[in-house]
Length: 431
Ligand code: GH3
Ligand code: MG
Ligand code: MG
Image 1 (cartoon, rainbow, N blue to C red):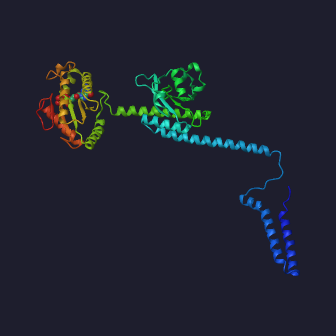
Image 2: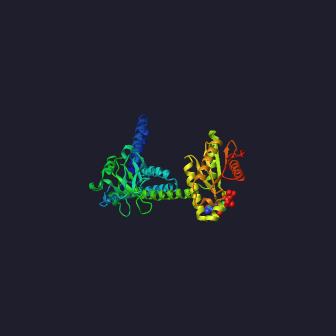
Image 3: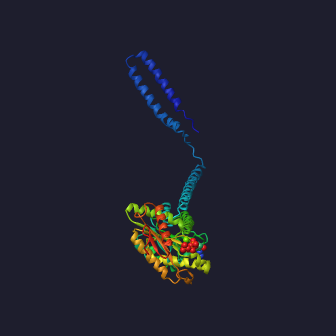
């Protein structure tokens, strides 16, 4: 390598100039100041010019470039570029995995199916940089037919009346790993009118929703925002996310079923006592807020023990189911029918005052009295009947507890006065 002698030269020139200066001071007193200034300025400029690069290298810790080019330097540069590319790809994969992990945790924590679908679509759109996604799930009437239930970025006309069979030949293209399928790569003869319409609207990739090894629906994606094709790794991310969504969806459906079971009476299918407390509280708050009436009816089968003892428990169960059926057919959509316990039932009538509730109670009582229950002649009056108590908020009670107590008292009065009748609180003789 060539030695850098620049500093040595500078110092030598400087010494020479200074000797000249010294001599000039001695012999020609008038010249030296100008000469001294010029020589010093020249030295400073040269030193600054030569020292600049060295100084910059020193502060940036950069090593001086070798002036000799070795044969293996090109290989090194190439290797370095390759390594940087691999590092970049690995960093991207770690970032994607981290995102996937977070998204999966978020999705599995959503227990409401509709909310889950909406969040899933937003996650897919964000992760895969597309602005179109659509979810197909079974129709209510026929679980073997799927239709769009939620979409983002597609206009309604694209997917209105779009129905696909769960046995569609396109779905056979999902392999056992259930990796997403690119619709561009599907043979044309497999694509029916519906698929052609969907492809025309921009759908490119589809992945199956498979909660339990059986296709229940699909998620379809539109094009990427930058109009590029989805890469292999993006297709894998889509498949993986759809798999998470499938599991989360299945859990949310299960949770919803369990929740429904926990508030439903197993014998009659009506709501149970657990639901009554929660719902009545909510309805009273609503009645308070909007200044509405609210009525409660409590009724009990007359001499049911006798019916049970004479005809057996199964006959008693059948009679209870019949009562529930008659009750369901008598209430409005907004009324809430509940099995209070044993052979006691209850109806919440939102926005109904005491007179409306009394009319309803009488209608129900007469329907039950008129219904030909199995071997009802075994009952004391020869008929299968009920007794009812009615009270209203705020006319008779100002709180949930008070309303239940007043209705119970009215029912007690109805029993006490001879059964098969309706009693309003404080009005004991109405039949
Ligand atoms: P009252 O007119 O005073 O109401 O007389 P009752 O015989 O109806 O009243 P009681 O409380 O003496 O009897 C209620 C009966 O209801 C006793 C119980 O065996 C029966 N019961 C409670 N739950 C069920 C049920 O789920 N199925 C059947 N078959 N019977 C039930
Ligand atoms: Mg009874
Ligand atoms: Mg009873």
